[in-house]
Length: 258
Ligand SMILES: NC(=O)c1ccc[n+]([C@@H]2O[C@H](COP(=O)([O-])OP(=O)(O)OC[C@H]3O[C@@H](n4cnc5c(N)ncnc54)[C@H](OP(=O)(O)O)[C@@H]3O)[C@@H](O)[C@H]2O)c1
Image (cartoon, helix red, strand yellow):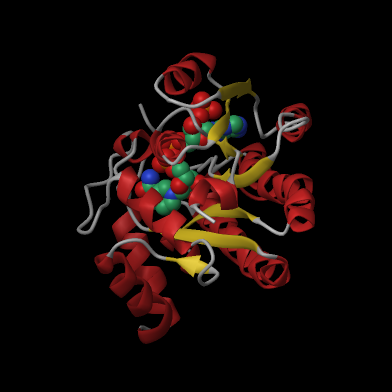
């Protein structure tokens, strides 16, 4: 089976209006898949859709709300969705105690609840068909506590562990699940922060290629050689408290977009 036969004919990308989500849409369309594109902002979503050579459905939905999740779950009705990319994310930045509890709740909904709901809705038909895939966007920030993005980092750990379990559960049924554990990626989300461009920062297309290559292999993929070395160093070689101190220093210039 080629890629479109294995993961098509439709793919759903949550968080598709810019950055990595738009790059996933571009690459998946290039491989012949039709796209369901989800995000909150209609205009950039429509621009992404207009740039794609295959069929598209755009869905404006806020995945932090029950209504938005219900819309995303209904978006695939009547379509054979063979691939889901859980990419949308919200990252409150600042000292945990200075943030509003509502910001943490929003991160939990967009980054944790939405991928779980999407998995529940779209994986069963894939299991029945004996083919399909799910990509969960995670982050190296989720390998240890990462102030001042403590809640975001914890949600990214959740995404990776969720993918681990689903990878093992669905592998015998021919459905491929992978967590893409990315380091810094040059997206508008990163550019909007005041963080300096870290060594090893990748372009979105490089991360997308690695994530899609990872389908059907192990439960996690870390794109980029520099980031793989960093991942091993931070998670296996250094004492955990040292890893937390390093990531805290590296993240201290992060600030919300102005
Ligand atoms: N960039 C990095 O350095 C990096 C590193 C590691 C991991 N990642 C992960 O990669 C993924 C994409 O990152 P990115 O940098 O491309 O992010 P981004 O530029 O901030 O884009 C996020 C996408 O999600 C959508 N989105 C955000 N909140 C949403 C909501 N409540 N409901 C629906 N859609 C929503 C946004 O569109 P709207 O604003 O139109 O809703 C946008 O299309 C995230 O999961 C992130 O954690 C990124």
